[in-house]
Length: 249
Image 1 (cartoon, rainbow, N blue to C red):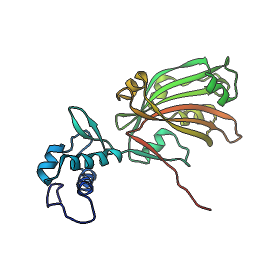
Image 2 (tube, rainbow, N blue to C red):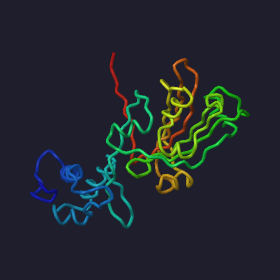
Image 3 (cartoon, helix red, strand yellow):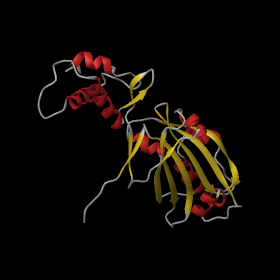
């Protein structure tokens, strides 16, 4: 059934809810693809004979669900489906995207030895004056920016081998560390918080400055509990979400 076929019904379900449900199902069916605009408030008024307030409430609901974004002068644009990451599972970006049917790629923005930041030094158990290998990459899924990742690797973990830009652009950092350094990340801890994208991060992620992001700070360790990587990953909130499964004891 097309979203604009059949009249709304009177009953316990509010009119705005019925409109939102029809548009939601149309998005799920692919009738409206990512980047396309949904019918305007005036169009919804015309089709369903509802007030502007009712039409706005339906679109507001879809925005709250992360299905659309409202842009001045452009209307209600359909967003690409969000990628969901279980909080109890540790995996690299490439593996994460592959399991969701997406193609991961990378663009290295900078890489080299620098004095570790105070935050990274504490997480890695090294002095702030100690050099660590700093990698700043854009993480991409199906050709669209997903996150900006800043990684710190202790120098002693690398020995006399450092990843080239070509290697960083072509594959998983976790896989490279395991293959070339014998450093396998098997566990970690992660803290996630919301943050507003500053102009520099917004430019990298191709979002307006001031947009919402999810910031994950992750410390990865090997089988003996020794730190291998400290990473700060800034995800686009419109493309990524985290899930935690709870059990009541």
